[in-house]
Image (cartoon, rainbow over all chains, first blue to last red; front, side, top):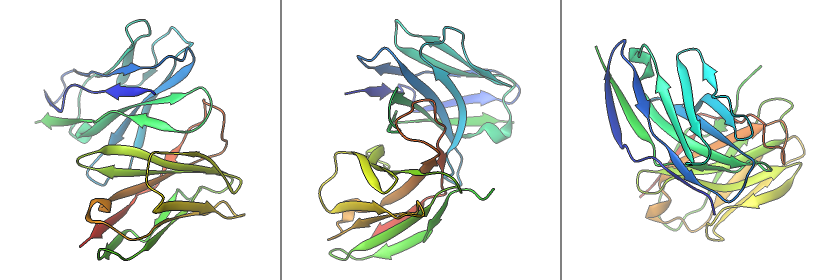
Length: 114
Length: 115
């Protein structure tokens, strides 16, 4: 069974600075998808960024980028120029090549200081 | 396009009762997945439906069941409620199933409190 581990329960960052959230996963599959979701206090889950395992290039979405290390099974999220609106719970998630089942990590609370 | 809607948004029940939660996917989406979110267990997959068929089921007791209708709307039912069933129940819809690169959109959730 696949597992996702987020070892940082909570992180803080100063506004305008950069922060990196860590995620490791375990799987025996070779093709899969990895995601970072943001859950603000409203509880609405929002997709931040997606990475296909077969792509070596790291995904980037504006201020959000990932460092995907397939051999190490590591998938970290870097948030640049942090904004107050980035404060939320961030979940790392895994999905196999087939099917829609997401396996989530425990989440990291990100606090942004002004 | 309207997003995923879940009703009701909040629900209070007592132990032993049963509850039915509803999820209406985005128009044109045929796949609905359900997740339970609790502080202790985090986000856990309950089940996935596509075209009225259950495609996948998580590790939950038989008290948890679901179904999907021909219009893709889905319901999940929890019978004989226990205190530990208190949670945020999220549903997610997507156009397809069985295809990995298939974005899922989440609803706002139903907050269930069992007293």
